[in-house]
Amino acid sequence: MSAIVISGKDVANRMRSELKDKVSKFIEEKNIVPNLAVILVGENPASVSYVTGKQKGCEQTNMKSTMIRMPIETTEQDLLNAVKKLNNDETVHGILVQLPLPKHINENKIIDTISVEKDVDGFSPINVGKMVLNEDCFLPCTPAGIIKLIKETNIDMTGKHAVIIGRSNIVGKPVTHLLLRENATVTVCHSRTKNLSEFTRNADILVAAIGKAKFVTKDMIKPGAVVIDVGVNRVDSKLYGDVDYENVLDVASYITPVPGGVGPMTITMLLENTFEACKRMIK
Ligand code: GUN
Image 1 (cartoon, rainbow, N blue to C red):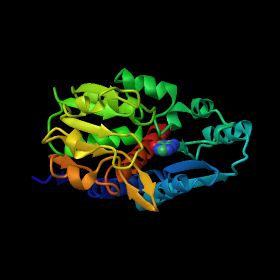
Image 2 (cartoon, rainbow, N blue to C red):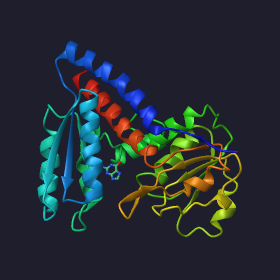
Image 3 (cartoon, rainbow, N blue to C red):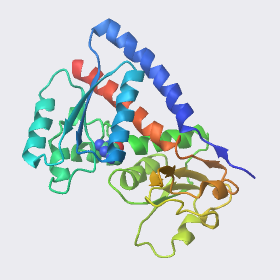
Image 4 (cartoon, rainbow, N blue to C red):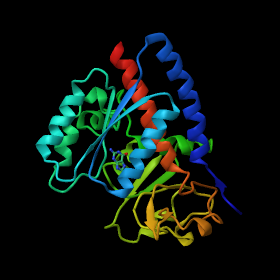
């Protein structure tokens, strides 16, 4: 058996093309261009690459992106001031501060400062709280993209056992809540979990968000499982997911590739959130 590959790239392109049409119509009618402001502190190559992808995504969907690059020595106060300035700028509809930030800056403090209405990453405490309570809010982009990809399989998540490896604020924790919303039974595993394979071998849906290349091997997979690989690991300038893709292909029913899986979906959800933020702001 060979798994069906869920192409995040194809799904993302389809969504972006539909979004572009909606944005173009909106610009014609309202004469306002949705604008995503992105702050990048420092020159971390992975962050530069992510941010470039976000800018390209804006171009692709006829939205504007405003790039703010700040040096690695930027103080917390300077960054707070930059965020506040964007909060007060009516021409900016979405704000994203690329993470991770340098160690001398308190990430939570920065995220708390982004206006809730412009928090298109869905990272602010208010948006996180609303997500947990199933209230209307901006959903965090990677978890929302993961749910879209699982829905592509047409498999009903109700009652399925979803196992997540990873408990980060960006992926593991929020995707737990989004899977619960879909009525899955959710288990969260992490670096301190004992006997990890015992959990993963029981997973109908496995979400791997560990950050270690090829960590999830064939023997850890329940035959027929849906495997979502969130890993982006650069080894000798090549990209690998957290899943041993070639071998897991033999046992899974569906699998997402790296690159071309979750990554393009994350950016697409960000673009959707930015357009939504813009529409809400002019109401
Ligand atoms: N760093 C890695 N992923 C993300 C993301 O989704 N948003 C931000 N702001 N930083 C990130």
